[in-house]
Length: 164
Image 1: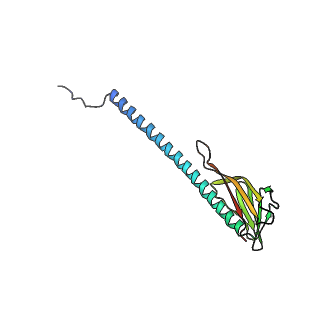
Image 2 (image 1 turned 90 degrees about the vertical axis):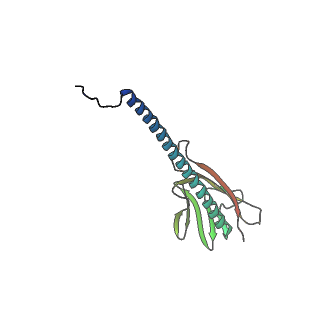
Image 3 (image 1 turned 60 degrees about the vertical axis):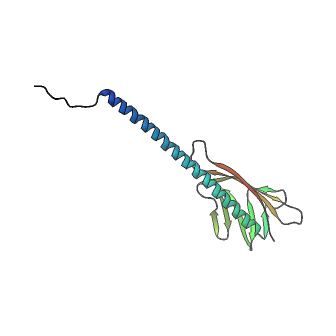
């Protein structure tokens, strides 16, 4: 009497399956890593663009409705602080720990989000003698999101004058 053998997989078949599975796992891992990196890059770009647009809009709005520009005081002066008087209230813009802050009668508020830092900010007073006060604003925003190629960085600048 013969003993029936159970049909199974050979060692060669198991090695082939394991090889195919390994290739599939490595491919999926690389794809997942690429997706995560693209997401971080997109978040960094988005944060920089949104904060840059907001800061430019806010500064444009406040400068154009200001009664006067106190700092920088004279044409040609460049400072890292902007001081405006709007409706009798002094508004001061300055950076602290990578945040652009506005200080007025209501206290101090951060203007940019937590996903970006502000650097290289400068306010330069320009204009004609006897003309309306005008300020050139320039700053750099950097994302805090960690990316392979480094953080997203963009420089912004605009020129705004008082409209009174």
